[in-house]
Length: 96
Image 1: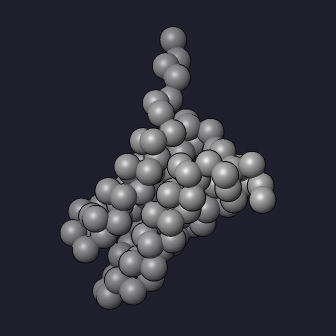
Image 2: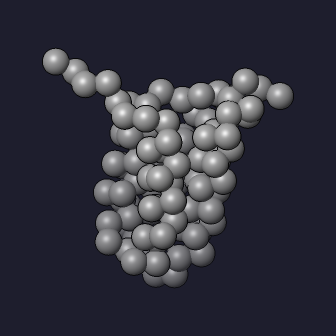
């Protein structure tokens, strides 16, 4: 078992990312930035599979995903779950 898999935050984030990916895959209709969201969700999954990810990178991914899905209400609960999972890793250190 990799070190990150013991961390419940990692398991939770992997689950949230997986659910978001599934919901995005079955979303009917055109979503102009669907590929951006799919790529970033794949990157998030790869980060958490590698262990405990860096908080700034998690937050950047969240912003890219949120920007890509925009205000698609069908994805709002899944995006909220991903965000809550990322929040459990703490805040990014402030750059001065």
